[in-house]
Length: 175
Ligand SMILES: Cc1cc2nc3c(=O)[nH]c(=O)nc-3n(C[C@H](O)[C@H](O)[C@H](O)COP(=O)(O)O)c2cc1C
View 1 (cartoon, rainbow, N blue to C red):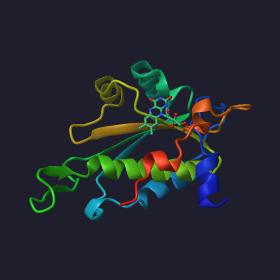
View 2: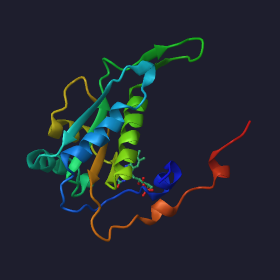
View 3: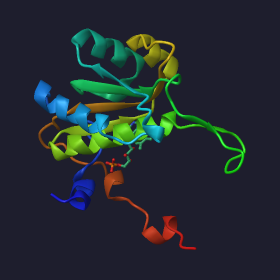
View 4: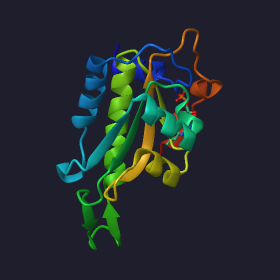
């Protein structure tokens, strides 16, 4: 599958099979995140693998969004390691790249998951405080998103939103 085919095939999976993900498959997903680029190559990303029954139960009390996924990755960054750039010449403020770093790490993992046939769901619909507490995230961990992972349930189908994309003319400008 070339990348555009993969990008078309990936969809938000909200119903997972009971089958475990498997350590070898999970390792590939995590490796794709490790290879992602980050600002100044600081690699401030942090990925918490939530897969024990107890941790998944704590997380599902904090947010229902993980559905029944057997693995949820909590992706964020360490503010102490993220690139912070104050460049008066180009930018009139201080800029921290941590959110972008965590996002490209999560995106890389999401597409590797798709390549492996796993379903995934990018989740931001949660109360940050509750998730932080459920996962006991430390002080130097800025949570950016959750990525649910698992084999799609039989007959799982993309939601109608998957087919709905604006035409390029609406979102791309040429100057
Ligand atoms: C930043 C971001 C946050 C999202 N948060 C949630 C969420 O909390 N719950 C959910 O069910 N889907 C969430 N999604 C999935 C989107 O709803 C989904 O990607 C979009 O509707 C397009 O559908 P598709 O992924 O099937 O193509 C999120 C996606 C992104 C990129």
